[in-house]
Image (tube, rainbow, N blue to C red; front, top):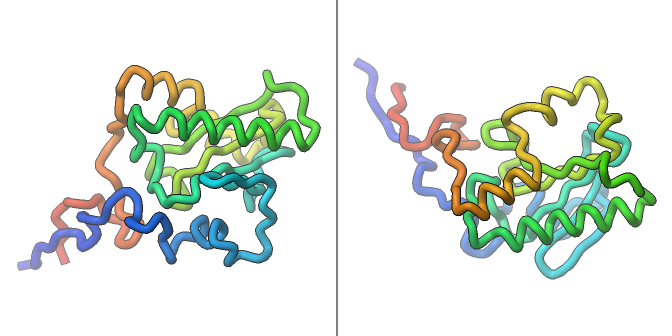
Amino acid sequence: MAEKQKCSCEDKPDSSDDGLDESCIFCRIVNGDEPYTQILSEDEDLVCFEDICPAAPHHYLVIPKKHIHSCLSLQADDITLVRRMAEMGRDVLKAKDVTDFEDVSLGFHVPPFITVPHLHLHVLAPFSQIFQWSEQKFKSFWYLTEAGFLQGLEKGKKLHFHKKRCFKCMLICGADVKL
């Protein structure tokens, strides 16, 4: 008979105690340990840089310096953080001479449809020109626009799509695992 085990990562918090996770590529970017990543904008809490695999002519990521797992980790008291992330993204677009803000998309992917488990806001422009291969990623139920996400937070709703998937063992944390 197979032995049952619990996921060893189930008690891991949504964010690290000291604000950085050494195994996270985005935390390494924040820390200056990724020399090939050009920082486009930075303040005391946020960093913006180009997406390594752009889905549009302008595709940037805005991340908090503090390690936060994903948009599922956010609550109503994080509204200011989301607004500041969006503001930084729009400021970078302005600096890059983007003028049509009706053709911009800012949003978050919902786990398990994230490639890096560190909160990041996608900033895409012009959205009408997203590359065909990426349409499914940015026009699906699993992509939440900044406006829609903020609306949910303002109503006091916390997202509950499913249990959080562990990105170390790729199992749903808390689930029984048969070995």
